[in-house]
Length: 364
Image (cartoon, rainbow, N blue to C red; front, side, top):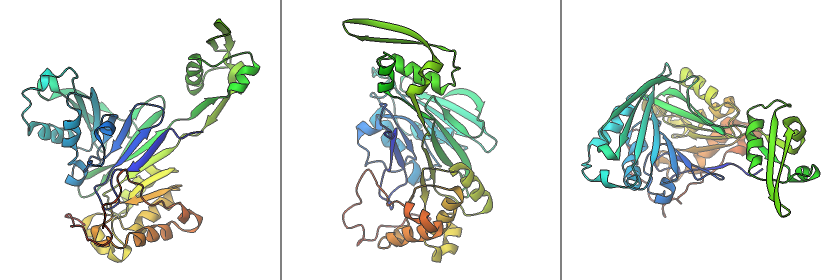
């Protein structure tokens, strides 16, 4: 079965963190973190429906301005999620600009920003071009089990982590896939049509065998319709487990964080996890509240992650990226070490990255 989404780092592992998730069968995408996103062409930003921000350190939020600039007048709306204080920070970013003409655009851009605290309480506000992005409070809410987004085909959950400042980790969970075997429909004298989508939806919703399903299609010079019980159609369906992606960055290595990350990333098919320092620099990593590659590997092993992509490498290792990957793989141990994936960024690493040492940002 073809994968429903493709997930890649926005930048090379030394660049600003971010993962772009593009859905194969829908005209949409999700983004985890809003650091430098110059690698994303406007058409990719215009596919976004949701952006999930771990925290608002500059390398995780500087791309918010470009996102707004691209989307004003061209995009109907994006939902944004972040840690405590996020709504105020979105308001302040928007208030830094003069919006005296944006109400003239035919397409109104609506930004809904939501923050979540450690108790699961949510606070939200709306910002629209028609009002010059004036803040409009939305009702407070509550998230059960950290769920931020729950749709028919996917769910996004978060965990509040510690980076000396609150920081969110995220998990994207596809719900079960259902496919229809056309040859089995043909054996029943049926043909595929729009009704197949209704059949799949009924299957995912747990339909009872006696539930009626109306099959409608056109062919053989006319329209056809039959009503069958769901139980009669079950043998034409195939179910497959959905994939799970987890994104974790900028976290201190201590027991509470590790427990929350392991719970969030349990059985992840794709784990994107920061591996900022080598274990030989573990004391420096502790001061900076970041993970070493060894620590990231032990977390990945404890979570049972199937494939791991390390990122957020410190520029001090510009010529030693393979050492970070090797240390993570060794910490995962055994056959699982083969699951460590080199970063596949949407943009290639700049020429000369391995010979020219990038400037370090604070904390690296």
